[in-house]
Amino acid sequence: MTDAPLPEHPDFLWRNPEPKRSYDVIVVGGGGHGLATAHYLVKNHGITNVAVLEKGWLAGGNMARNTTIIRSNYLWDESAAIYEHALKLWERLPEELDYDFLFSQRGVLNLAHTLQDVREGVRRVNANRLNGVDAEWLEPEQVAEVCPIVNVSDRTRYPVLGATYQPRAGIAKHDHVAWALARSADAHGVDLIQGCEVTGFVRDGDRVVGVETSRGRILAGRVGLAAAGHSSVLAGLAGVRLPVQSHPLQALVSELHERIHPTVVMSNHVHVYVSQAHKGELVMGAGVDSYNGYGQRGSFHVIERQMAAAVELFPAFARAHVLRTWGGIVDVTPDASPIIGTTPVENLYVNCGWGTGGFKATPAAGWTFAHTIATGEPHPLNAPFALDRFTTGALIDEHGAAAVAH
Amino acid sequence: MLLIDCPWCGPRDETEYHYGGQAHVPYPDDADGLSDAEWAEYVFYRDNPKGPFAERWVHSIGCRRWFNVLRDTASHQVLAVYRLDEPRPEGTR
Image (cartoon, each protein chain N blue to C red):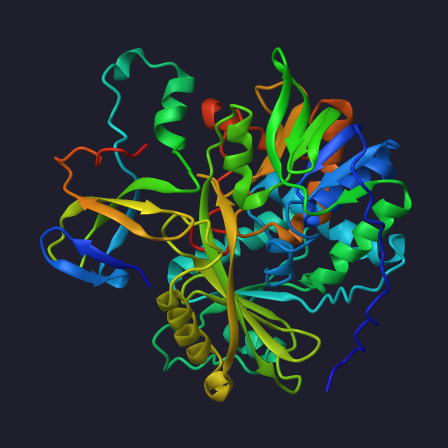
């Protein structure tokens, strides 16, 4: 039982061109953020002589591994602004791209289990409202109205004391989002080049003027990095050090079930987030594995703990099965906020540090990164997310609203 | 699940330990004379290699002592375990 038919599997949506000798802009990383950057370079800035270089296949990294949650209920003004911009873009993107990727605004509940959680939640609701983000504080009985399968009894180990609720939040079909962006970029002349790993940078004094790749040297006026977990590795090739640490982040799905879960539920305290995909599988995630890792896999006890949390919150899940688990590599910053902007190297720009929350930001990351690359200056939305905030101390501490322990 | 060989207790499951990030990051000698950029480097910047990485672990529900592990972050293979007062094993970055 599904509430919407899945889109037909499309025919080929993009060419597979050979790389040209040079481009105005090279975007490194063909995931959601790289593809969205290409889309907005075309749409907002008229820059079409662009290559997106992907070492594997398009959208095969974190774009294929995330739990598809979209929300904008972040605490600080800077975060609320950029994530709300993303949500507004999501709301019009299916029409803009002429592609129904099943964006479903089914709302998100962020549960509170302690007095401190309640205070943080109420504060975040007030902050959200001041920033034009839809937000409500719900008491436990209201939580049960929105999502009847949540156990709101006071007899559990960590009772639900309330929740923040963002009705406009939701989920989208992640693969189709990437394909929609790719089709649009390709149709406007952007070269999407897969199986093309960047192995170095071509320098002219202090400037980057191109990249060395597994498919030869490609010159570029400007280069933007959108490589998530491998950002440190890539930036290191250009002599740029980034304040990020790469961690495994795991997720999992159950087998298919009847529609039972009408919304998205997240809990920081017992630490699990759950939604139900259109096909019917329960999609779950939790926090990162504590250690640094590039292996796209984590440890099983992390899964075990989030299952314990899921079963306490949703007794109905007790007899479901974990069908498949997987891991991605997320690049986490000290303040759990992203880095989008210029680097100490001329013509080299970086979009990284999204950690566990990059999918929801996909359109805004693309919008602001395209602006930064096209003009050489940050957009007002990403100016606060500059690399130099770690030197000035103007941090944007979103460990609370990031909803995932880092 | 990593299996980590505590120098004092022997091999134990990862769940007995807590992670402490990069090893060999000493407090700056000249703390009074550091620029903002140098402070940022000490406070916020850590190596993030894909490959061998010297990191700290604490055996929090065992002997509660800290020690260092040399681990490959791509394969998760533990290459060496050594005490805090021992140098990083020879032949590594």
